[in-house]
Image (cartoon, rainbow, N blue to C red):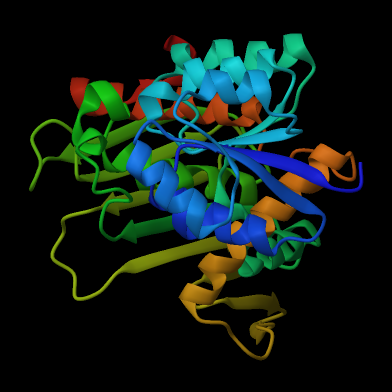
Length: 336
């Protein structure tokens, strides 16, 4: 196909600020339809982006639209029903993270993709930051040796101000499933997907009641690599913080700022490339690269790089994190 026809279901902040602007600017992509249950929002956003086909019912969109692919950007509680419907309609789909509220809820989504022979990608945009992609390339080229330890964290406001976002029955959880799942995915991706063996998590409810707003986790993998991860919406910090440090047998590297050091004999050699981009620029490019990757996969030019199967395995680790916090003990993945 020369032009990929894309529909967007759910017109909240991520669709308005990220997906629709990127789709409109993308080459060989056409936004053919949108769906949103809030009629005022539907018409306002569709008018803004000059989209003629607009529906308050996503099922009507799937029945009438001739789109090739769909972006699902609705609240998490609706992901299972909508995404399975999209897959049964024989459309490829990019669904915002998390794939679902629980591992059990995510499984039938992945099964539906397999059954219908459709592509499903989950929005793990941190992988698509230019600095993260460069870091993974350096790791694969053995510049820091075998990676052993990742220490990462993210302190910022919650990703949505919608009331559903802090209701566990609708969102599936708090900062762990909002920010933590992205840190987890990025860390495991950089470590080349080692199976997780055990998880130990502590969570806090500093300014929330129904879902956690702060968490600290220690994750052991089967290849002896480990991940230390912290995330918070509420800790009193001067400004937003995002960091990732990775330590290998021959060197070390970090994101935000991007730095790479390699040990040569008894010296640490600075391999950091010249020039740096602002955090905002890196974030914007991560979403644009994510979209390009998805469109490429729909066209058959590249595989899906953050697949439903991978998202399913991340959901299993997230469930272990919640179980560990609830029971105040280390959890073995195999015992879930």
